[in-house]
Length: 107
Image (cartoon, rainbow, N blue to C red; front, side):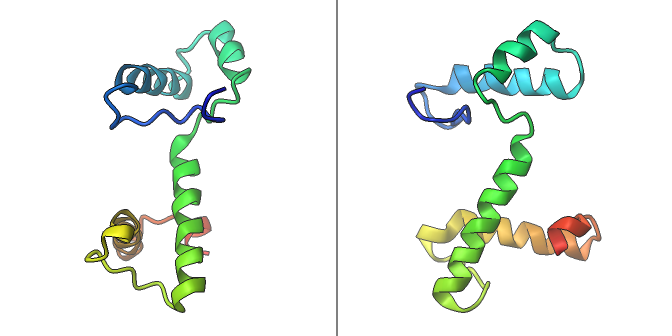
């Protein structure tokens, strides 16, 4: 309710324990070991069960904004403001080269 989402940052000392707990709930859900009662309760919070998809889309949208602003997708890792985006782009290129990037993500 306070933040408008259930994506608890793991690098914040104040929320580290909650982040671990949420991560465990997602893992339990994805391995089908979470009770239906827990799923129902967590669904009422609009939890994003597949955070990796949300995260990927978030970075993709950042890349689109970067391209609109700069006219290219060559994000420099030297730019402190875009350091994490540059790492993400590098990871996508590597996954593409290894043929492990999904066709949906390639498109």
